[in-house]
Image 1 (cartoon, rainbow, N blue to C red):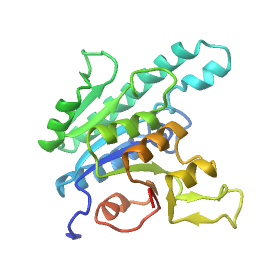
Image 2 (cartoon, rainbow, N blue to C red; image 1 turned 90 degrees about the vertical axis):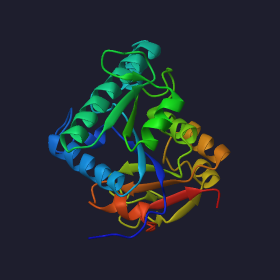
Image 3 (cartoon, rainbow, N blue to C red; image 1 turned 180 degrees about the horizontal axis):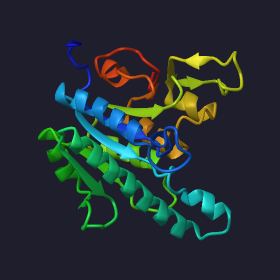
Image 4 (cartoon, rainbow, N blue to C red; image 1 turned 45 degrees about the horizontal axis):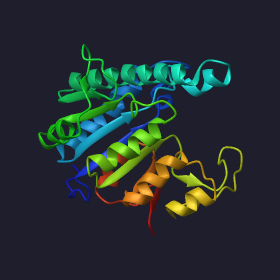
Length: 241
């Protein structure tokens, strides 16, 4: 049993909606969401306070329909509802495995989720509950990447994690270029200047302005979440340098 101490006590984990699709082309793969939930519970039981932000791209992408002619604000509000659906699914997966989880929404939907209130969110974390932050920032034109950066800063996280299907940040697409170079460490300005598409520029700038370190890692490798919190240099670290 791995009993090394944790190097990070409070973290914000950003999951894309697409990460939940697994073997499917749409929606949520039960195997994937239960595996992710099990890893989150493992670090929670080890003493980590953990908040989650989940995108909604597996159900609906507001920007995509806006490009097709739909009003952008309407599309983004529909995208926020998709993130609430994913958050409720994650809450269910966590609770079925014995964890205590709370969904907190940036838009009012009180029949299914609490309103996001920063002090209450921090209190949930302090009590050992897993907080799932839904509906992005509650505003159109902002991505769930920006919401993750904002929530990480608001809860005073020690680290923000972005879970992807690639083992870090590369200088080009490793699926198309077998010689693509993986970065072990980047500064925020490196990411912006090189247009590396780690997260959107607003999210990177917010992390830079408040010194929020982030690590990008491959969520498909079981156990990496725990190893990162124990201090292993997995994936790509982005900080002030």
